[in-house]
Length: 155
Image 1 (cartoon, rainbow, N blue to C red):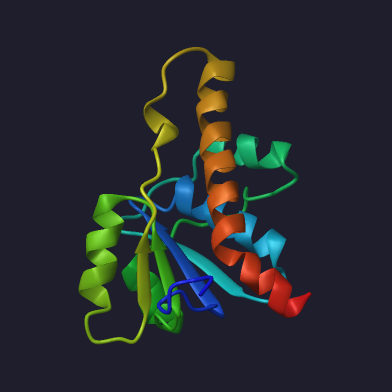
Image 2: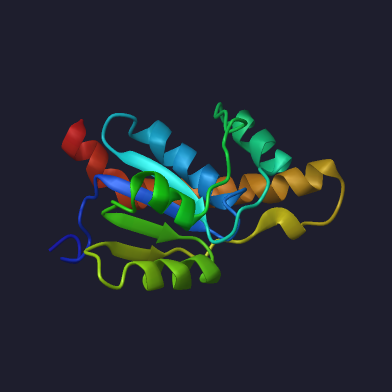
């Protein structure tokens, strides 16, 4: 057997982190670009932050424009459209606990992908930007691995 039985191919994916200002919008944009027709993709945070300019710059280098992203909380997303996702991918411990709490009574898979928070990077602009690039690369590899079956199914 190639994949564990719990690994299903989702149709609606939510990426979640602490502030919805760096990691989760990056991941959502990466997945959306890889499979633009195959999946419904959103991102949310435990709390509402401000979109990080380094995240915007790092994603722009890859041809992604996340500059119009508006950080959203789980509660706002639930109010606006509901938490109707097959899969919630959490990128921080705080988001993972919140997702598990919110989905206790729902048929949704929650996966925890521990992802480094680049906002604490020291150094000059280039060194800080490099920390964000590394998060992008890490997320991109993880997304390709996890969702490669989506591309095969819709290819």
